[in-house]
Every structure is written in C-alpha cells, then in structure tokens.
Image 1 (cartoon, one colour):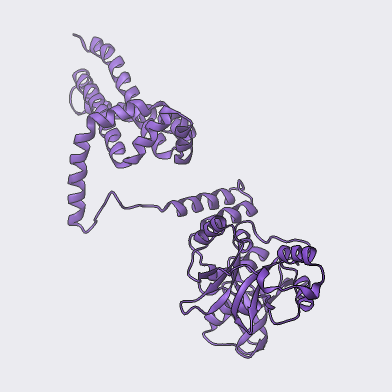
Image 2 (tube, one colour):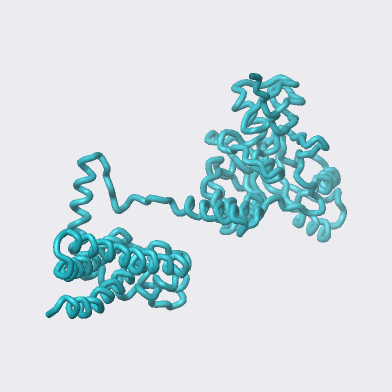
Length: 429
C-alpha cells in the first residue's frame, strides 16, 4: 500500500479515535462539574440518567481514573498510528516532528478544548447524556483503577501523605456557603438572601447562649403580687409569654401566657378573683450548650415557643424563644410593639451609638458589618475581649476596621459605646 493510500485509510480511524477521546474529555468535565443537588432532585423524580450520575459520583476517584485511562489509551493509539504512517512518508526525525505537531493540534482542539468547553456550559445535560457509557467504562476498567489507586496511595504514604476514601475534602456546609458568597459577589444573590442562607447554615454551629435574652433583661412577673397588678404589668410588658417566679427571680415556677390570662378573665370575671399561679404552664429548661438547630427542632416537636437557659450548675442564664432562632435566619422580626433594632442609633456623622447588651450579630445585620461573633456574644463583650480589661469611659480602641469609644460604664458592665469607621493613619515621610 502506498503512503497516500495509507494516509487516506488512516484518517477515518484517527478522527474516530479523536471523537471517542472527546467523549471521554466531556464526560470527565461534565461529571465533576454537575450539580449534585439537581441530580439528586432529578433522581427522586425518576430520572434514570441522573441516578447513574449519582452512582458515578459516589466513587468519584474511580470514575475519574477510568475516564483518564480510557482517554490516554485512545490518544496514545491515535498518535502512534499517525506517527507510523507519517514516518514512512517523511523519513527521519522530521516525520516524528510532523506527527507530534499534527496530533498535538488535533488532540488539543478536538479532543480537549472543544468538548470540555461544551461540558462546562452544559454540565448537567452532558453528564446525564454520557452517564451510561461512562458507567460501562468504569465497570470495565474498575479492577485496573483499583490497582493504580493502591500503587498511588502506597507511593504517597512514603512521602507522608495519607489519603483515605473517608476524608471529606470540602465540608458540605462550607461548599454551600462558598457558593452563596460567590453568587453574591457576582450580583446573583441579594444581600438579604445571602444573610438568610448563611443564617440557616449557622444554626448547627451556634449555641442558644448566643441568641438568648440575658437573665438581667428577662421580663418576669412576681407571683406574690396582686392579680390586678400582675395584669397591668403583663399588659405593660407587651410579651405574649412571660416567666412567673416566686420570692426569687431564679425560682421560676411557670410560663404565663397572655391568652390563658385573658381566657380566665372571661370565664371568672373580676380581676381580683383570679389565681394566676394555676394558669402558668410548666417551665422548660435547656442547657446553654444546646445548638440552635437542635433547639429549633425541639421547639417544633414540643409545640412550645419559650425555653429557659441554664448553665451546668442549673443556674438561670437567660431565655430563648422560637422567634429568637427564626430571627437568626430572616433577620429582625418586628411587630407593632417592637422598635427597629433596639439599642442601635445611627448618627449624622456616620457613627453609631450602641447599647453594650446589643449582640454582635444584630449589629452586623443592622449595619452590614463583619465583626467577629466567635469571641463574644455582645458588643460590650467583644470590646472587653479585645482590650483584655474592663475599659473606663472615654477610652478608645481600634480593631476590625472600627473605632470603639466607651461612653458609659456601670460597675463592671459597659452599657454604651460609640462605634465609627477607623480613621486612616497618615504616614509621615
């Protein structure tokens, strides 16, 4: 057979091999870039192709190894055949050089860039389309891939790198959080939606102690007071549920619901004839280390909206409500009796007057700041943590890009601060 006849006969074979290589490349890119959430949803709706994609992604390392093995075999075979024919037409090193240059261009354009570009744009569709042949390739090359994986792991272990199939390279929560932040920076997710999604993810990391109302701020009712006085106080406080104590605020005997109080008024009549104590419901105590996610589930299961928070010694620390947890997701929930962002007052010069008991998270939400909330719950606690002392009034501190000035202090408690943007430091040459 002449050289020209060999080239004509070789062309369909090489382009056929390149087409198979393109499918391998597209499968690798599409399967690694496919949305797992969408694939799981499609599988639940009965999509078999999505089910195959999920099955392949369960052992992603084996899938990638099988695809790469098939892809390399095809590319090497195509290059070898092309080199054999071209070296017969162009003797010596020039034949090898021409064959290398030709196959490099063909493989790069038609077997790598083109299919991978398509796979990036249509990851989910391409992954579903190529899931069946890819699954077949994985089953055929599976034993070879397991052997290769064994050799790779043993080799890396010599250099101190220990790989395990159980290691989760990227935690699911952090992956979701990173995706939300990325889409927010691209303008595809609004700031409010970003905070809501972040709040949902934070529920499993935060304790009830970080959102509770401190015991000093709990609106309580004294069971020893006359019924009429109790009624007036309950109406003045404006809460639907209030702890009822006897003798000592630490001695909570129940939670009084205003609906129960009004129902008793309708049934009994005169206010002075009411016996308030039997109307109170049994108090619910939870440890301060309870995660918000667990407490939210407990609220829904118990069909209760209020829980009292205690420390490891059983001492009352505060009160947490269902609304407190929901506000971590959706932001401040105001009704006709609430004032917007209590304790935060914006000033005309751009600074903010903040009560010391305001939580760092509430201040961040109100001002769209990023002050850390892992060191302290309240803004006063954050200043004390950073200052490593209890500051005196008029003392000023600069940290996290803000200037904090202590305005008032009551005993060992900071009650008011002024927070403003840190002024840039002038450099003197």
